[in-house]
Amino acid sequence: MKGRRPSLRRRLGVVSAAAVAVAVIGVSVAAWLLLRDQLSDVMNERLDRQVVFAVKIDSAGMRAPVQSSGPDTPLYQTVFPDGSSLTPVGQASIPVSAADRQVARRELYDTTEDVKISGTSYRVLTRWIRTKQTGPNGHAVQIAIDLSETNGTLANFGLILALTGGVGIAAAGVLSYWLTRAGLRPVDRVVAAAEHVASTQDLSAAVSVDHRDPDEVTRVAESMNSMLNALGASRDAQRQLVEDASHELATPLTSLRTNIDLLLRAESHPERRLESADKQRLLQDVQAQMHELDHLIDEVVELARDPRSGEDVEDLDLAEVVRSAMTRARARTPQVNFTLTENPAIVRGQANALERAVLNLLDNAAKWGPPGLPVEVLVRQWGASAEVKVSDRGPGIAEGDLERVFERFHRTKEARQMPGSGLGLAIVRQVAQGHGGRAWMSRRDGGGTDAWIQIPQVGPAAASL
Image (cartoon, rainbow, N blue to C red; front, top):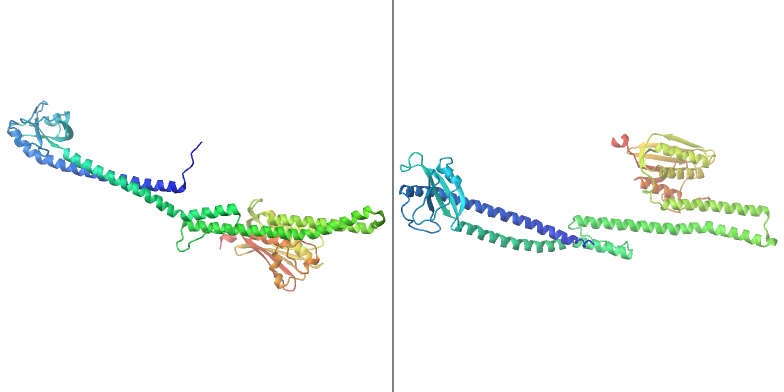
């Protein structure tokens, strides 16, 4: 079983501390290497200066005893081409390497290396020289300087770096933890609000936002508040739809129940049997109520459906959608003359949803238009948008109802005398808004109504703006 994943706060703290640790270690190593190189240069300069004294000792025949000793006293030695060496009296001999013998044979001018002499570290410079005593071939002189003090300095400096670096890393870890904790406190508020909503279903709970110092967490909190507001509005709309649908369904259901109860009582009591004409009239009324109920249920389902789900979104010609809707409208109301004036208008949307919205406008116009007068339909480009206009010569809509007719189940005084659910225009507006557009009604000059759908257009017409 895998272990529990560390929290975000702990992971951020570890990453911050690790970043500081890498920086501290990198700076410490760089400082130690820089000091080592500088001390090495100093030792090499000292070796170069000691060559003069080495030549003097070599001229004396290396027989004089060592006069003084200590960490600052260099060691001297002569190396001959055959590899033999001559060391001053009383001084430890310096190891002779192959490179030193090459210098003595004049194959190399000089060489430098670190060696151990009697357990102590020395830096040895071997250089070829020629004096009166050596003759034209010359030989090599070695100078060795004790590195104990230099190594001690490097060791002490490394220890200081390790101690200060360790303290710095520890302090950085603690500071990173507290800073991360303080930085994630707004995130904790967002999490607490989300958990509260999940446990209580209270969509009105909002995350407190500090607008004085906006940052990424502030934007997350604002986004969550916007999401909660949208969810709350959606839930309120669904609740209102259910309540309104229940109210609207009660009327046809009550009528159906009354008519069916009357038919059953008449069949149960032979003396009260209905005349054939009355029975036929009741059955026709039941059938009409069933059709109205079926139509109402279809529209409630359509209105409750998420307009962004189900059907694929594609580029389509709005004129073709309108032609398809008109074909269906003519089949429903063959007595109405529909005329179409069209221009190609490419939009991106759902063909079936748009056709349903246009068909609702056509049905509405056919229901209100007087016999003998056509319902005029226009499809056109208008700026970066595509528009559909459905015009009738009916009684028109009162100024105060031009907006309210798009509300769910709203029916004008005149509309209550005619069949319908009051959801058709609500579906039109929902489809238009789902496509990033709008729907509205306007009074027509000379009487009647113009119903509009406007949605954004794609293609050359929109791209040229």
